[in-house]
Amino acid sequence: MKRVYALCMATSLALILLSFGFHEMTKKPEKHLKVGFILVGDEMTPYTDNFIQARDHVMEVYGDQIECVTMYNVTEDRVEGPLQQLVDEKCDYIIAPSYGYGPAVKEMAKLHPEIQFCVPTGDNANQEPVLSNYHNCMGTIYEGRYVCGVIAGLKLKEMIDEGIMSAEQAKIGYVAAFPYAEVISGYTSFYLGVQSVVPEATMLVKYTNTWSSYSLEKQVAQELIDEGCVIISQHSDTIGPATVCERADQNLPVYHVGYNQSMTDVAPTRSLVSCSVDYSYYFEQSIGALLRDEKIEDCIDGKVYGQDAMAGLEEGWVRILDINQAIVPADTEEAVEKTIHRLVTGKKKVFAGPFTGVNPYDENDRVDLKTTVFEENKTSSSPTFCYVLDDVITVIE
Image (cartoon, rainbow, N blue to C red):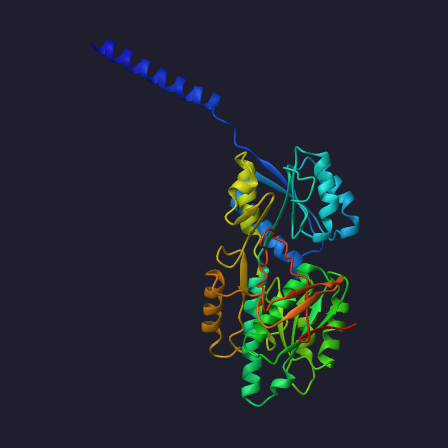
């Protein structure tokens, strides 16, 4: 009996070991990805630092399943060399977050169908030829701009109610990089947020014609302040405008609304709030898809149109950063919650109201928001509203 028992035990052990060995031989090896990043700046610029934080997030999430290679300070007109370098380094996935990178990256994607490419903020993924390995993504940032505009409007109203300034002095300024739809959509939604609180408000816009120049952004911000602007916002990459607002020596205080990161460190007495797109969601979901050999767009928690993906406040892709409780009016938090609720439920349409506008590139292309609501990001993550509102927004040279 003991012999039979011993034989059974030996047989069982052998079967267990055999089964384990067979499993090890047939188990699919864990996939690894090499992910390349091409960045237009470095951690010193808020725009780039926002993407660095998203990269660091996926490195923490996936650990040794991914290897990240990053190229910094690559200007849009010199992206081809770093792009080729990442291809030569056998990257599986290349992320190049700057609008101007789009054409060159898509050309490289044509040549290398074995590599996945993504240009966040780009707009050409669904243009012919549509490539299965080339993608765009962006958060619906107009929502964040509008919320920030409401906060700025509340501050203006407080200053008017306290007799610090008159309603006619409610002039806001905007440091804008380029006259692209993305920028125009941003400053228009910001203005409309302000105007929802202070109907008399007007806006001055001045372009820097560069994404990132600390000295030029400071200069333009100061010029807008000299024109009487009491709140400055921006679609540019540095902290320059915030530093000017903090140090402004004017009869009226000048407040600032930032982009891509909180500006309270550099402007603690003047920074009201900032907003940003959190790309960590898309990066995590797209890398996860590739690790599982799945199509990226099938794994994105948001709206997908072909090779393009987007999401907004509701999904966490758009964030309101660091409301400065020390200087905003007491009812700000409540107003923000109500505004966000109305936006995500569709009760508030941003691009609507008693306004008309003209396309700066085609004077015959006009929009009438009195009769037609413009639906931003309807079929593209890249903003498409490109009309300067008549009478209330003025672009200055």
